[in-house]
Image (cartoon, rainbow, N blue to C red; front, top):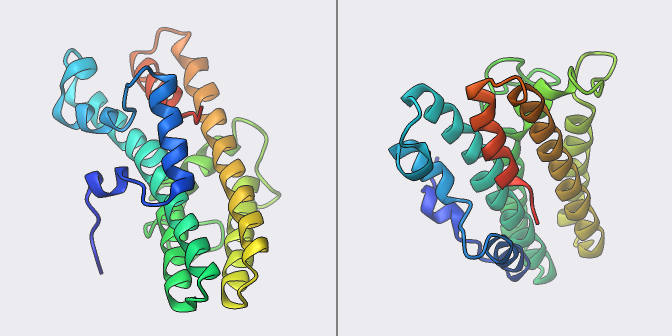
Length: 212
């Protein structure tokens, strides 16, 4: 296996995601949202007065919804670039990486994944579906079902060099992940209104994760 540094994840390689990254900075007057995870880990700036436990939760959420989100998008567009260049193995590798970053390894092999062990987008969507009536008849997140379906479709497009259709899968997955971010913000904002300190902190992280 191979480990990826947080700093490496934060630096998108593809022009499409670099443009998205620039929009983050422009909307925030130069504020870099990926600094949230580092600040939470170190307990600095906006996290100086909050407890290590709350900072840990904030760092975990920021890594999943900001840093790893950028990595997912970048990996998908790297797959598209490799597809266009007819580099099937490279394209498949980037596409597999995007799926792994989105779903994570802790979900296990069961259909619908784990209800408790995940840490990334997949688990967040699963936890939120109960609150937003978006679970299927088996209790699995409908958004997750659609994300997995599109990753499977995209892999087939990579293998057959259907790069235009691959772009459609990228757009669909990006939209679904954005829906998870909006639901996540709504969830934490709802409880933050009850003056719950933890949810106030997580609502702050969630607001900064929304793509401009």
